[in-house]
Image 1 (tube, one colour):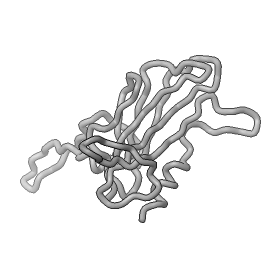
Image 2 (image 1 turned 180 degrees about the horizontal axis):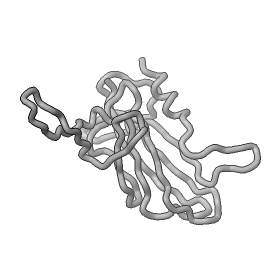
Image 3 (image 1 turned 180 degrees about the vertical axis):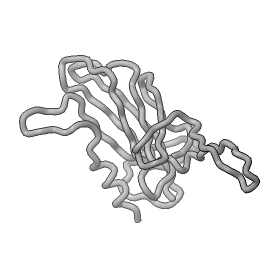
Length: 161
């Protein structure tokens, strides 16, 4: 039913651009897995087709192809249209600062995302934006990615609408 969603996400470029002359120093891959419960244990199955209410886990792997450490890696993962981010599922295997976007990836901010709202009586209140309005997640790694094959891993989950 939603095969296009998985194929589009897997095919997205993740970091930098490569040219005919040189390979990007850090290369990323993104894999999608459907989360299934079997005997009260989670199992991940390659996401070839997804159905409403299924949980999809995206796993992003970044590999350093150069022989130098590279600091300041920033990773962005989309929350595809037709899905919502599952709160508190974003993590990384390195210390990283997580920010989220509610505007299509134009800006990123720390959680909780809030906005001032003016009530009918003129009172201004601060409203917490729910995680189902997130459009992207962004991690900024606090440690360098080691040279010659060093890797960093990031993951998060979405629910299919």
